[in-house]
Length: 511
Image (tube, rainbow, N blue to C red; front, side, top):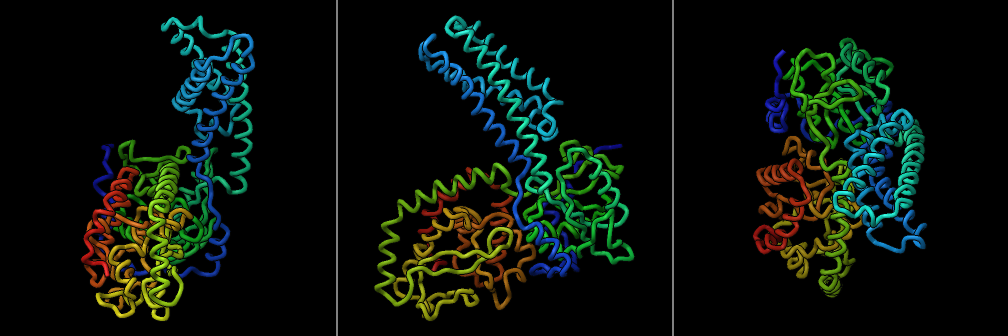
C-alpha cells in the first residue's frame, strides 16, 4: 500500500478555507440537561502524563545528585572537603536522567510497573558509573576520588531510584483511579466505527484515556443513543460548549478517512477548541507516514491539531509572565502612581475600571484598566466602542488611552494568571462591529481563545490596535492572532514584548 502524506490535506488553512454552508457562525449551541450534568463532573483540571514524567525527571536528578553529595559529606573526615565530588555528583545525576530517557524508563508503562523494568534501571545506573570510571581513567583523575564514596553513592542512588519509582507507581495508579491523571476524550461520530474504536481503546493495558461521551450530528436512527456503553450527549455544535466546561483534552473523530468532505466539515467547527484533535486510523486500510501517527497503546491515531502551548511550554510561558510582570510593575510603578493621582484629581470615581472579557477557553475574566471615562458614562460591556473625540472620555483619559498607559494595571492580571503578557488581546464579551458581535463577523473567531489572552499581541504591534470599526479590521486582527497561536515560541513572545514600546509611538488608531 502506498504511503500518503496527510500534510497536504488536513492542515489548519485547509480547514479554515473549507466552505460548509451548514456550519453555524457565532457561539456554541447550548447543552442539554443531561450533557450539562456529565460536563459538570469534569470541571476540575487534570495532570498530564507528560507533566508527571517530567517532574519525575527533575526529582530524580535532584535526589541522585543529593545522594552523591551526601555520601561525600558522610566521609568528609576521611577524604576532606572537595567540591569536585559535588560537581561530579551533579554530572552523574544528569547523565543518569539522560540515559534513563534514552532507555524509555520514563514511559508510563515503565512507571506503572517498576519491578518489571528493574533490570533496565540497574543497567542504566551501572552504566553511569562505568562511564564515569572510564572518564576518570582517561583523564588520569581516578586516584583523586574515594572508592568508598563511589560505592556508597552507587548503592544509595540505586536504592533511591527503586524507592522513588515504587512510590510513583502507587501514586500513578491512585491518580488514574480518581481521575487526577488522565486525558479526557470525546468520540466524534457514532455507529459501528465508534464502537470498534472504543473497544480497541479499552483493551489497552496502559490506557490513560477517559472517554466522556459521544457527539454526532446524525439522528438516533443512524447513530444509536448508546455506543459500547457510552451515551450520545449531543451534536457537534453542542460539543464545543461541552469541551470547554468539561476540560476535554482530546477529540477523536471516528469517521472513515475517505469521507474527506464530512471530516473537513467537522474540523471546521472543532478547530477553535484548545484540544488535541485526532482522527481514528485503526480500521483504515490507508497507510500514512509514521510521523503522522500518535498511539494510545497500539491504537493508531492521525494527528490533526495539537493543543497550543501545552505541558512544559505552558510552564515556561507562565514563568516568563511572572518574571516580566514583576519587572514591569517595578519599572512602571512611578507612572502608575502618577496616573492614579491624575485620575482622582480630574474626575470623580474609582481609579481602576474592571471589565469582563473573554479569556482562555472562552471563560469570562475581569481585566483591570485605569479609568479613562467619566464614572457615570462608563460602558463595562463595550457595546458602544470609543470613537475619536468621544465625549465620554476624560481629559486624562484621552492621554492615557493614546499612550496605552490605561493598560498598565494589566501587569497585575498577568501576574495573577488571568492574562498572559503576550497573546491575543481580550475583547469585551459584548464587543460589536456594525451591531454584529465579533463572532458573527469572523467565522472561527473563538479560535483566538485557544491560548490565554495577552496584554500585548502580534496584531497590536502590526498596527491592528484601537477601534475595531470595520469588519475588515476585526478579520485582520483575528488573522494575526491565529498566526501567533500557530507559531508560538518564547522567542516570539520576547520579540513582541520588546517591539511593543516602539510600536506604541504610532498612536493613529488609539483614542
